Image (tube, rainbow, N blue to C red):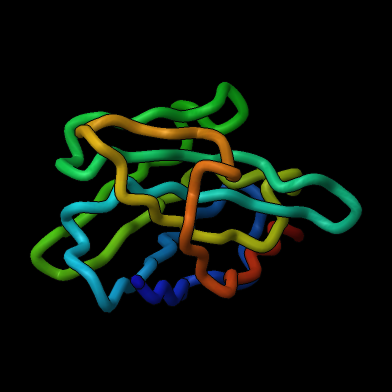
Length: 126
């Protein structure tokens, strides 16, 4: 089991930045592949970013590529999402997710993840 707690959400103006954090506890954090997903009202959950257990591999959809950066600090059991150049369409509840895969690779489908945080609200508005 692993417990995940997100923080860092809030209200930001278009063009602004936020950094989300996801604190993990329980099993060894460094054995988990991690990801961020988001869900806006009335929309399906959307993949935002993923990172392998070593941090050597990352992946982003085109909607956030070049604006968002996923990273991890295994010594601190923490996952991050740096979000720059935020747009109103980035408004959503952001969730971190974890899975323990068989190798150092990434996964981008939500059904592949076993553990989820409670989410943190990000609102981009002027």
